[in-house]
Amino acid sequence: MRQLLLSFIVCIGLAGSAVAQSREITGTIDAQIEAFQNDDLVRAFSYASPGIRQVFQTPESFGAMVRGGFPMVWRPAEVQYLELREVAGNLWQKVRITDAAGRVHVLDYQMVNLESIWKINAVQILDVPESTV
Image (cartoon, rainbow, N blue to C red; front, top):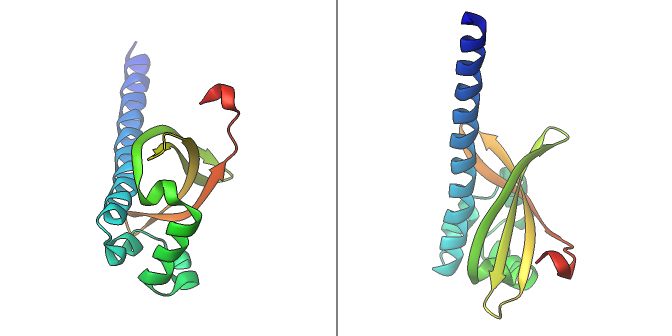
């Protein structure tokens, strides 16, 4: 009985940790989207991983890429978080975004933890069959 109780406590602790981690990850994504909505490219750029920052060099270059390649992120009408999962040792947060025209997009955000701060390391647009949106 004591071993079962200990196992239960450990599971609850791990689940609580996962929930906190998930909140931190979605908080980072929310903060970046909010920065885009406020045209605050410096702040939006700050949520990108060092690798992304190195590729784009400046907040303006990064913002131009997002406006052109990810307009649904630039000005979303609705953001809904789906599952957080681990793939090949990387954490991916799936996000359902409805754009201003009402079109639904599903994106996958690869997240990295750098010194206890979550950063966005990659974003990809997923193909979603019409029947699932």
